[in-house]
Length: 76
Image (cartoon, rainbow, N blue to C red):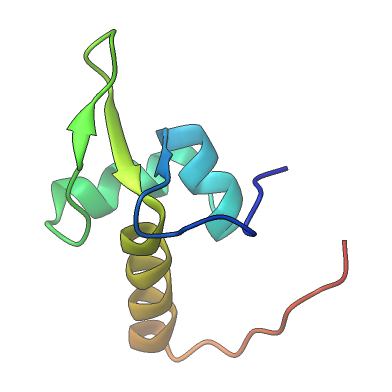
């Protein structure tokens, strides 16, 4: 499980971690990148994109608002 009790402005997440935090599939995060909704902060040592946690949260929030979905936080 992704830890959300961190500094969201400096914490970097992989595609898998970003997807888990946003409760979507990894392919959705890749689509956000392709559509320009999310930009990689940098790449890791293998050349894979990593994202600032705050950017992932903002992209997820904007996506849900555009879709007019209603969602609630669920206890883990």
